[in-house]
Amino acid sequence: MASPLERVDQLESIEKDIASTLHNAGQAILELSKDKPSLKQMENHTANFLKTLGSVESGLSKQIGYLTQVSTGQPHEGSSYASQKVLQMAWHRLEHARSRINDLEKLQNQQIGRASCRERV
Image (cartoon, rainbow, N blue to C red):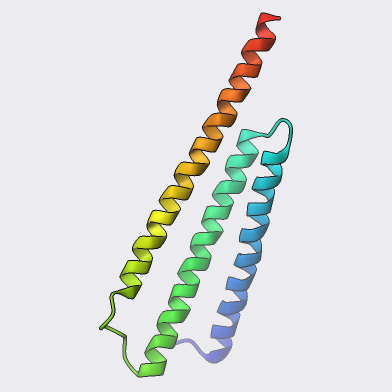
């Protein structure tokens, strides 16, 4: 079992990951706003965003689980809320991934269209 200081350190690490997640999201949006966005840069920022978001989610889940156990003395077993929330978040991530893939496909098609127009000239 982790000491209170270790818990605080873990929460500080989660806080840094949240800042990193927001930074990566901002970088991805900044890249999309450019006249000629780099697909590779966009993919890197998006991958980093998803990686740190997963880390934040995992860390917060562990902290919430710990708080649930210490506040009641045992794990909470009578609710399906956690499972429902996990499913809801999974669907949300899936829809977000689909949306991002569609956006990237549109950008790719635009780039291909521009390239083919240049070749004709």
